[in-house]
Image (cartoon, rainbow, N blue to C red; front, side, top):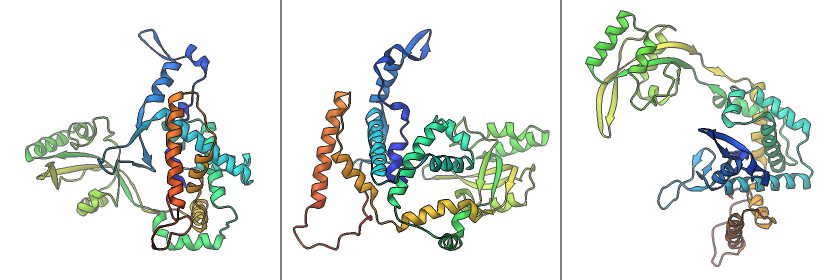
Length: 356
């Protein structure tokens, strides 16, 4: 459900069209000179941002380059799709109630780092409730008339227990050196009592950003590092919290095609055992996944069709022209998709199997 929806939801709602009064408001100052809200929104309207599908960037198949679009136009597309979904939910009498929205909000509040994620997105809880309303509306449209029993949920949980298993992990600070001279220097400083965390900021992996927090690197047991060097995980498992490991030999890629011998030293800051998330914790998410799996409805395709039929107008002329061009192309694609094949073809996929 989220794959096609995230493309629009991920664009901040703050990019909505500005009212005429905005020209009299300011959003910041530089050397006592005001930055007007109108100027701010004008930049947002034109700003090119990369398109994404889920968490993956969309690339031009011919050139491999990232596909970019104007942020203002994407924001309007997002708002149009959101409204279409809400209109469909209202028409089919599955509009989420305030009680359902608040219940989902409370459920999300229990997720790890809830407040931190809100801050990262720049969201208030009211902003999140608007997103929840749209997501619930889409979910209720897709799963209208579908139920999943507690026994089905329990059986799916038991059959897929690995997906609900949180791997063991160790939190470390680390020092990485690529030659023996540096290693001897590090060992001498550790022996003198120099703080390991201070040394970790000086001897850090070459691809780690300078702003990265080297005092809190969390490494799960299934990480690429331990797949490649399983003895490192075994060493860390034997090392008590607060202790420093002996230097561990490791192969380092210093340049494309060039590998050198290096050493890595860890200080173990914390450990967490492997955990299995209990059924009660994942029951609701699992029930929703099973309901969607039962659904034959292709809401993405319906959304495309509704978008093509919608009466849309913008206050920005260039966006009107762009919308008309896009809808003309979309109508043509829909007509071609509905046209019967001119020659015998393989059986068409069943309803709900196509991607809009």
